[in-house]
Amino acid sequence: MFYLIPIPIVIVAVMVKLLCDRYKVKILSKISTIVIVLGVLYFIYAFADYNGYNILNIIKNFFTI
Image 1 (tube, rainbow, N blue to C red):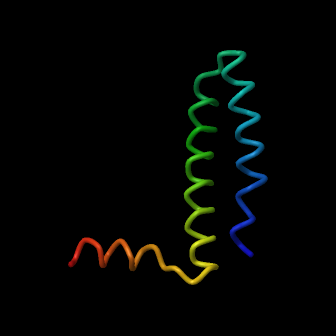
Image 2 (tube, rainbow, N blue to C red):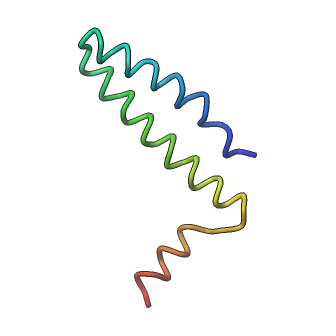
């Protein structure tokens, strides 16, 4: 169940992003945006891997065929 790890991290990053946008802290806002994107991508990859889909092989087969 490693796919559940990024959920609290993404929730905290969303809260930080909302606060940073409100108080105009641009650098922390960009960092939290990157953390959100990476957390969501990791969640998608880990959840697909948990269900038996290997996304890297699917993408590799798509481009080689």
